[in-house]
Amino acid sequence: MTDEGEIPEDHPRYQSLLTRHRIEEGVEKGITSKQGLIAEGRGESFDYLLGEETIPSADEAERAAAAQLLLAEHAVLSVNGNVAALVPGEIVELAEATGADIEVNLFNRTDERMQAIADHLREHGAETVKGLTADARIPGLEHERGKVDEDGIYAADVVLVPLEDGDRAEALAEMGKTELVIDLNPLSRSPRTTAIPIIDNLIRAVPNMTAYARDLADASREELKTIVTEFDREKALEDAENAIRDIED
Amino acid sequence: MTDEGEIPEDHPRYQSLLTRHRIEEGVEKGITSKQGLIAEGRGESFDYLLGEETIPSADEAERAAAAQLLLAEHAVLSVNGNVAALVPGEIVELAEATGADIEVNLFNRTDERMQAIADHLREHGAETVKGLTADARIPGLEHERGKVDEDGIYAADVVLVPLEDGDRAEALAEMGKTELVIDLNPLSRSPRTTAIPIIDNLIRAVPNMTAYARDLADASREELKTIVTEFDREKALEDAENAIRDIED
Image (cartoon, rainbow over all chains, first blue to last red):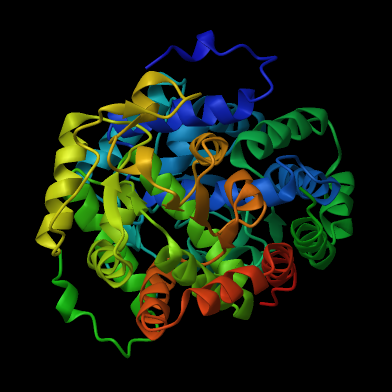
């Protein structure tokens, strides 16, 4: 495997090469699962149809999500295998810029993968990684799937849930939490039911949210609330669907 | 892993469960690669957008492809890791129904995977599996990628190339071969440049081609030629693109 630093940033396929490199590293480290690889492929297709760019309404969603994270009493960024593999350093920076916690939560939870992911995040600068204590449960999910930290996702008022997991997104919403969902498929269940659907590639969305969080660091709560209120979730979903439908070769 | 026979055929997600089961088995047997898992995900997204059904123009493409295989002097079905994992028995049946050869050809060729795939196909009834001799080269492809059997793909006049591999599809077309491409993305290079693009899921397309080949077993060459000539590739690509664009949740 090549070193990430060897991929020239001005390469026309930089984003794709970087993604491929990080996914390969994720597999080697036991972070990325088989299901994660298939999910990556699903995302690639939708990103291809979106034009592999952050569409304007996704940019607005990322700004609103940054504002929502700054407004939170206790925000948590939920991290699964693909998030850890694809944007480990970027998630740590977003946590720092917003004061959010990082918590690992897996669809197929094993101690080995939990540990590998926590280690990988720490190598990328994370100081505290939650999710390993697992001393609370999300109601309505089966035992293993529902495990969370009591002082993490269980207590959070705002949770960023990147990537597809419809059941969990729904169960968290039923607990009254405000959810921010990053998903490349605007038709899938979790973005359609969330407060702020972010239809964009993780690798573009997370750094952009961090940039907005830094821009808004000195904004008043009123300003932040206005940004969140003015965000139009229906329009964002519709724009993303239109972008997918109107693709030309 | 559950046994395939344990998946009830009337289950609403039968096709999806069967696909998942076969992919898992492919990984266990060393047939399915990391790239194959990602490609499977890409296919899933396009299939979702197509409505997970064989659209009428894909059905016509499958009939024309069956006719083209029956017309061939020497047809070869090219098999990669995902084809072997997803439709091993179905490919053997198609070969039998059309008199075509089966040849393994991999994007990332290793002796271990070649052997595992050939074994898997033989377990599913294949008598002769080509591709292991590799005594000829497709001009214009790098050494490993261009390896084929001289009495297989190299000598063939008609080749079925399921799943994405734009470079190879192009190089085969330049050798003057008639290509039939199965790919779920109507915008990707190989279906757009092929004689008969089949925009459908392998798991539906291959058995349907076999059924048509059996129906047409007694057809005259004139009838078969008419079926091929009347097939409208531009319309098939356009229909598939429209199906993808018009999806409703």
